[in-house]
Image 1 (cartoon, rainbow, N blue to C red):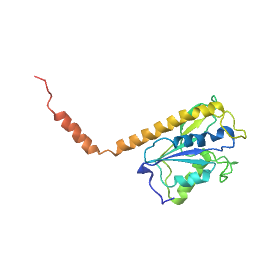
Image 2: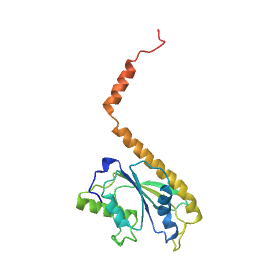
Image 3: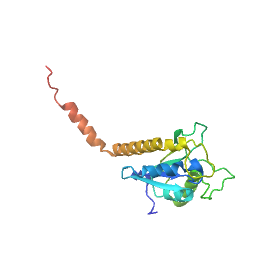
Image 4: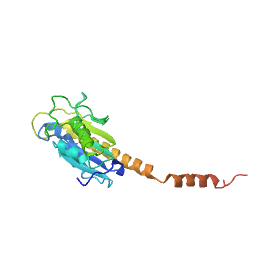
Length: 197
């Protein structure tokens, strides 16, 4: 970590999480691996965190405007269904959950730990957290994604690319010099209309 930074610097982290030894739980890891082959805006970092949830929580203290978590997400849909979920404020970790077990920390536990770490260090969590998830078919032991989940990876890549490009575009638009834009509007209104009598 290179010192705490403010999340307003526009940096975006795309984090693939999951266990590649549990079938479709490797969806996030596979998706960020595929993203690595795409040209991304310079503010976007893509990383495979696998089962290292504690590492991800500490990484987020380095100051990001937005986090995109990519993970298998069971919500009762058809296997291979891709979801886009805007996360609310970090929820409570279930009382039975092993908070610091890096091999069992799901996104909720990571975000809850991040909230605790931020309070203790003065760091700022990302202003926006999105989850790009995929309905798994099987989370049984074994390497490799099921057919519908493997087929959904390309769609998830497209969703992530759209999200980060939209966010970078919105950040650039918000940073534009507003007074100059207003001056341009005034000039346009003063321009003589041609062809009117």
